[in-house]
Length: 256
Image (cartoon, rainbow, N blue to C red; front, side, top):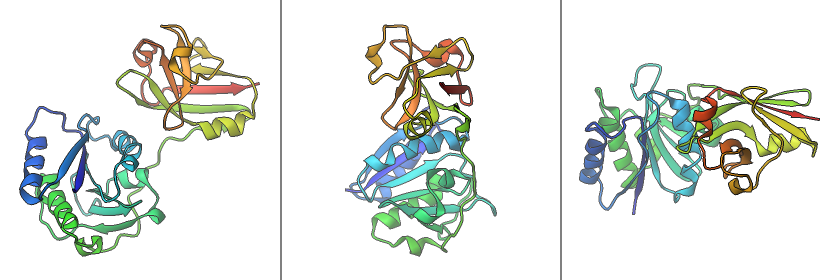
């Protein structure tokens, strides 16, 4: 049974979600539609890429992932269909594909067969997904694309024995996820003692938890989460809200 996922910034108050789902049910037989999220920050492709990149691999191969964020197409932002890791992605070449994977990892074509006005997901993406579900090769949708529009993700940096990272995502529990990977932490730290400074020198953590519950309720903690990124949290509390953290807030790890 074909699976289609939707990742958009539409929220739930307008007719957009229902329109697209209705079109899929009309055009495709026995399709399953999964809402990854409709709460992406408006036009924020970095937010959308983070969510999609850390969820799509858990779906079965052959799943079609629709991204409805900043979808206006023009001469510089074509509509693309992309195949990678056995999955298909349909969206606008606005930089999101460069955040999801490198050019070398994928097969990409511009979608040229279907006209579009102001609602590309409904008018173009649904038709492209329908053809893929019906067995069309991705190459039949348009011309091959060699390069994506580039956007550069915010990366952690290293200065001597210090890692300087940033908050890249705040989840619904107000846990603040950084761009500091477990691999980078291990590579730079080499087993040394450390202190983690969250936004200021007043918020200091000196150990990494394996579980949230290793600290007392209300206590600040650091943990490497399920996607192996350093996460700042408060056990049974709202870290981002209480500490005034948002995307781009700074987290420093200083090793002895």
